Amino acid sequence: MKKIVLAMFLIAAVACEQNKIGFVDNVKLMDGYQEKIDIEARYQVKAEALNKKRDSISQAFQLEAQAFQTKAQSMAQDKAQEEYGLLQQRGQFIGQQLQQEEQQMQSEGQTEMDSLISRVKKEISGYGKSNGYTYILSGGEGGSVLYGTDTKDLTQDILKILNDKYKK
Image (tube, rainbow, N blue to C red; front, side, top):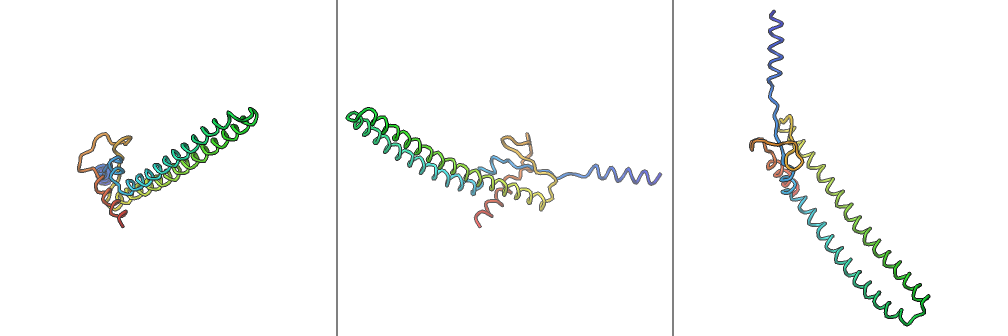
């Protein structure tokens, strides 16, 4: 009988064990993370430079096309069509080059953001382990926390760690 009571006591003790649970608001975390802000700013500058380049090339190409139209009026029709075809090909080539540059820039940006997200997840995991958390849930848009008390919100703690490490 004593063994049964002891076994029940152990089962009850294990069942009553509290899990330490916290949550992180991913939106606030990422919006406040300086490295993410710097990455976005860097790619914004690159995007603006690419747009200026695109505008400049487009303007130059339009001037060339206008000059060709004037020139084509005094050319034989077959010669004008041949040169017009070459002009079209050149325009398509320029458009493809600009599109490739934009895709490469987007790909680089996505790779950098994926790496950043991986580091953030690793930091959250490390924080959870070192502070005795059983679970750290995801809050914010698309997160799984519909409500959490402010005392369980770890966002600012983790954001401070991330920004401090980034400053170094």
